[in-house]
Length: 537
Image (cartoon, rainbow, N blue to C red; front, side):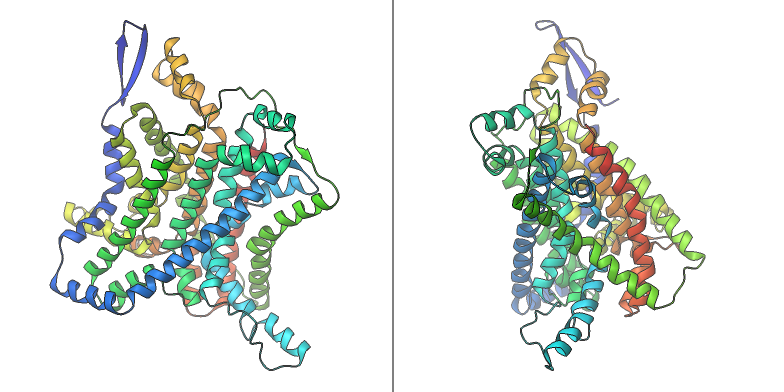
């Protein structure tokens, strides 16, 4: 057990004090990330030449493109995620029951699959431009936007990643005490006034957690941006590692990228350190929704339909058309790929939720900076490009002289996934814990509640939606993971993502459509089940 009980006879209560076990666990998960930072301390002569060449030539352009991409994705996911979450959680309009679970379906769509679909659909030889040229009687459409651009990458990444913000904000809106909204209504506030002045400020932890997850995913993405021809910092990392053959230079570029992200996370957390987001009122009933009708209902339904259509329905239609037009059929190996993918996703999601609760709860009880700092280090794994993380793990295994034991095994894949995706579950659980007032902990301990009772009877029931959300995020992320799986997978062990990438990289999009659709269909079942469970009161 990692909790120590101290009897305080003055107050006749028991205080929970964390030991070093959760901190050590955080360090173990962060070892590959720490190894990347350690690369800054061991420069080589050739690495200095490569870095100087990159800094003097192409690196400033990579940094500028990455900044534009990050700002665009942040605006896109925040606008789509917050608005749809507020409409579904607090308003009543036609189609709401469908939208509340369907809006998270883009989570099952890998970004690189969506990039393949939209590039084939909107490029010069695609059906849209071909139809417009024939209808207008012209040979070129100079005004038509090029899908292979930074703006195309921003649109695709925003459509694929907005469910991060939607899930967390919807959970925050549903768990908010209805007395706050009742007070706003009593004072004459309408839906949008209550949204801007009451609900959105109270949901800031969930909003920032969702945007941070989307930004780390966008910054670390390689498959989609490379297919669009967008040169980002991740592109520079891969070019230094694979093109110039300098692993140390790639690690140093990764460390610089991680340092910026880590600084932004700490600044955001410090900006809300003195703020309180917990509600002291009890939630005895559901939030009474605002009933929308007429024009308002139409616009509300349209605002929810557009992200769903462009983020899921249209890419599925495009890939399904490619799959059936190719006349390719599934063979027996597809079932082994599906089994491998589901097994890895399920095991990793369960372990990640348990560890996330452990680390987040330790930081809450400890009320110190050490555990919080360790948790932030673990969260950085989401921003590490998968291939760089895989190399860091292999270097770590070599230093420990156990590479022969774990390299290319099922266990090392799970370790890589936990290091990469634990941030999804950890930030979700932390956002849920921030809404539980600390006075509830003090009341339970003053009444003699033990360490397990405080967690199992109070916090876990209140965190039910947050835990389901965390498990869902990790499950779908593991299903779509590509670079780390390519490097670390055992011999003759393929997943749906690996097969999809290998076929699409050879421009065999029609053949890649079947495994891509299988990823989507396999992710639909847990997405629908968990979303409907979260919608219940």
